[in-house]
Length: 459
Ligand SMILES: Cc1ncc(COP(=O)(O)O)c(C=O)c1O
Image (cartoon, rainbow, N blue to C red; front, side, top):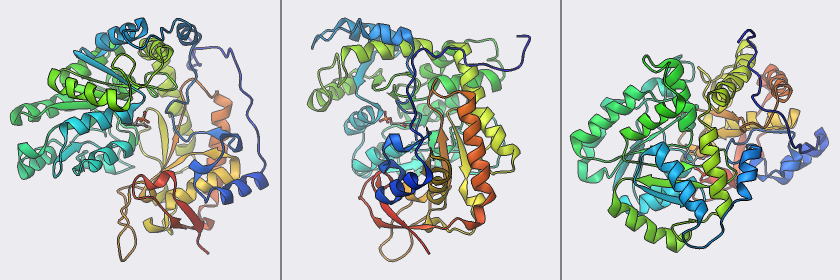
């Protein structure tokens, strides 16, 4: 290309108006929502970076494909197309559709994980952790040490610490470790990629102990793109070939099609073990639906199949990763601490470094997320002690490893000027960082408390 600007490789075809609530309206919304940004109405938000999950824009090809949806209860044509695309990509024998990623997790862990077991993962995502713990098992994070250091600049900070993994298996015993998972990219660790070499090293440990290996594959295409850019030997391979190699290393995967499926809903569990698949299908019928639709409409299966084909397009991935990097560079250049290098789907602001005067049990990242909304109507999400900290009986919460505000970028949704606006809001709020105060929780649920907790500001 003669020019260096990487443009959005699409034209806008349909538009949705954004309401532009003023500051008073935003303040009232915060109070009503108990200072929990999950409690806001979407119309109260100007730029919504709460999540990249299911929030992207589908292509005209996906919408056209939805018109072909076959809604037959059993044996739908749309299922067989979905199955073919997923099998071609992953190589796994058994393809089980689910209504989203956590349903695949719930079913997989119900079949494989028991009371007192331990499941290692580079970093468990919140639903993955909760689903492991719901089985009475321990969700053990074994990401390499630098993966917990926001400032460490490394190409593959999502890698598993192989020695920690081996030590955990030796300590607990192989009969207590039913499977090992690797999350690509590592969402809760800053959207950082995992190298092919590390996937192979995890596989070698799993083989040594006879333990199955699964991928949490939500962002497999973004991970494949990072491998292409950063890992020697992959520059000339296509993203699809790299993804196929990643999948071939594991025995199965859970997938939320709301991310790299480029769909608004859906997911799947794919695996090679036919016995586990049979048990999983039995549970699927109980909770999701018949195995050829698994909680989805036929048209959803079509949208996912087309999305999985589109997501490995080089033009799309180049734009996707570059646009995340663009926001990260704006913020970084202003001296604001972020997780480095930028991840694939989101920019993560390091609230621990930006707000050192707020201790973890006063939720510095939540305080920062609230301020970004208050100032500019930008909604992000706290990934810190509100999400991952542990309440104790007689003292402050046990803190999370990091205090981050994640600004996740929906796929193919916002233009560069939207992102420029977000950069301006962040820089303005950061300039007043020392004035920001912490919060306390006034009500919380026993599981996944960050979704519904109510908070109030501290004096
Ligand atoms: C790494 C990871 N795993 C699992 C999930 C769960 O997927 P879903 O929201 O479709 O249930 C998510 C969702 O954000 C995720 O990022």
